[in-house]
Image (cartoon, helix red, strand yellow):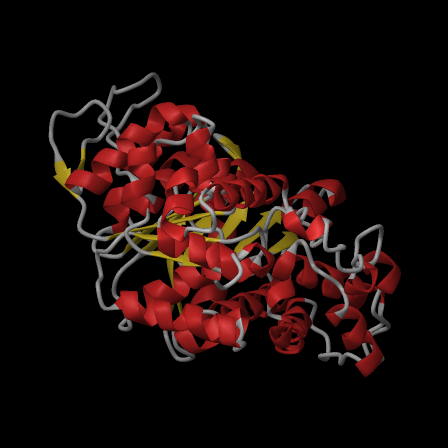
Length: 464
């Protein structure tokens, strides 16, 4: 979406006069409006087309707006959604905002306030829609330059399955959107995102593949699924490791045959887009634990990209912090504040187990505690270091005796990472350092094992 591009807005509001007023504000900002008076009709229209943003009344004839917001968030977690209500609830507003709501406006609505809110939402959309802006969010350290080169390489093949791996908060969703933008530079193909962790198991099949009328209790109309909505674009399944084992066979058929069947239908439909998945889990470990299908993993690893954690690319931290502070200044309608050198050093000394997401959290928390008229950000250093190790606290190198079987490094590894570390360590010892034999023992390709050894160089066998 370019700076001059039009946008589409879904308004879900049962008060026709109020919806008309809100629609006039949207059109004045250059938008096209689709109005629905209840959740049922909004659900129907949102499965057949995409929207850039949405305005929701919270009290509707057939339910609460925040229930529909939850559905919209699963399908497109980055779409700005603005809630409007005549019965404001501060606790509810805080909870919704933490869950990704863009803003919460009380009625009667001030036209100027709505216009300003729309402009902020559009600014966010336009700031994050191009490959160049995605590069700003990923970084330009050597490790991330390699990731971006891989994205550019695979973008030439529009239907190749891609798996993006990395710890929580490393930017897997940003990489996914960058790949989509590189593959479809004209912005003509849809990007459909699904958060598998937020999708109930009983809804998974109908949400993804669609359903015929009467296919299940309550299915009073034919429903298009997200695979069909993706068309020739991108179907992005985030946190694919959360998909229940019983449902993984459905995904395997989609990947193997590139076709699917809506729930309750006898008709087989083709899938013509890209299947893109992301996970913060070790899927190899999940296979060994019996929680993930090995054949599905093979299909997903046609082309895999691993995003390194922030602690392994500290060169990106200053630029990311600057970009995040600019984004937060827009969100809170404040002048962008600057980091003092000592505060930047404090950030660079922290290991950030939560990665870029944690960095944003500490900057946002600090911004809210900083006076509006201050030029410098008041960094909340106490919160930053609350019981978490920094580089200053990393233990000294182990003794020569301990180095024979080194323990996992003190770098805030997740439980799964620690398990994977120990498995690779054991496999290399049993294989006398042989990469291919060790890789076979832990269920990885030799290339994937070499990537792990780049992350944990202390495991690399000594040169003969």
